[in-house]
Length: 206
Image (spheres, helix red, strand yellow):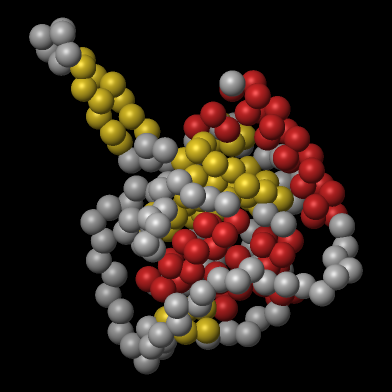
């Protein structure tokens, strides 16, 4: 099964060469993603597709994937030696030597240029209304979703982990310059993940 997943990942990565290398002749179409715009989160910018794609790490990415992954866990035996318990730790994206571990993923989808364009629209054109004060208070960071950026050799060079439970994200390096993402943007991202095919760890009523 693991061999099959690695073969599948190799095929997907190779296919991205064609997907990202082709010029789009047809008129661009955005995914139909609800904006959830209100007085807190508004469309603050009107950056063009070119401007957004010139932002790091999109400007360095040969292919972009969205993924979902499960809990990490440690199985521990109770002292009496008869029973075992499973202790669940925070989930994390498994990357070994710059290679994404496919066996640890629930789902993986290669984004098309149109889908990448829609993603950058959410990340770079929306933000918090400057006239409002906003305090962030969270209890956990247990991500199950990520945006993964691969170079031309199929190696992971950056990623953004997202926790839809507490509405937080963490990027792999300080070179990724994202403004603070607020609640309604997370709802937009959640809808986006669902539309591109991610279904695990996303509540149906969100």
